[in-house]
Image (tube, rainbow, N blue to C red; front, top):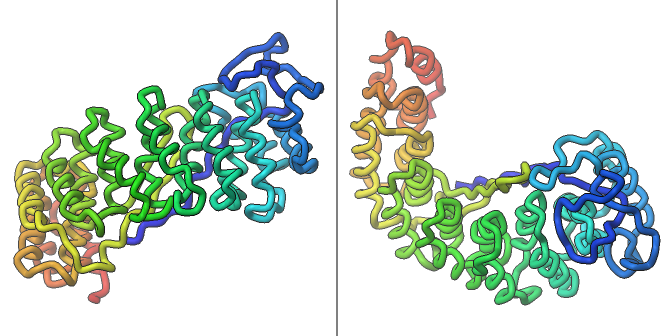
Length: 397
């Protein structure tokens, strides 16, 4: 499915002044109690908020925002909503890519609040950093040094935009993602998104990350890997399908459900979220309807879903969505459609499957109008009556 969704808008922390600490850190407090000490000397004149060559209008706007919002910054949460961010910064008319040099300089500031502003700005208006080798290298360098939990995931999301074919840096980014000390937030964004946004299935560095973390014992990294493989489905079909089928048997609900979506084609999107800040990204993934290739494990996978349905263990809507996709898939066999239909019936008929029974009625009729008479049998079921009514009112397609 084509599931590209705009990247989430995450309000990130900012500040007008520069810390006197030379190392990039997070949550450092000064005597004024706002987390920073103003410095007007040339100590950091070549980098950061006041670097030479920065756009003066953007620096001024940033200072206003940071002055209004800086004291509320929390190292593990960043900023929640701050009116000044919209009023003084986000509403500025900035041509995409034109001010990347200034925003990259913000990432090199020793104050985490300034760096957070740079991250936010690059997500909103950045573009040239994706193809400019110097800016790309500085971005990676900033991520390598970043220690602030409220920033690192969103910054890694920017690095995931870098295509090694354009800017190099493939081995360097891969090494960062494989490093034991690198945070899980950074790793999860790189493993999930670098293939998607940084060159597609030609990015062999990203493929190696998915392959490496597929065997991780850490849930978030395993999730990142199984979704990262979506981008490499065409080039590593057997490997991807085998991984998803194995993970469908996982005792972890989320891992099993997301693997089902990937294998069946019912949900091939990607998702990552920073555990500290509000930053999250969803969408992407391969278009399962644009290729005839299907996993050879599909028959067995449908059997696993049917067994779950009969046991009343359809605990995620992805299972229903996956069955619906198979029912409507022109490349599915008659037998596969029959198995998907049987599984839908099993979901509907077992009350232990909860509200997903209603979703199954909706999807069943949507993809197989011949099932209208079947679902009509549940019109008097209090839990399903509204779903039945809505499904029967659907226009036949």
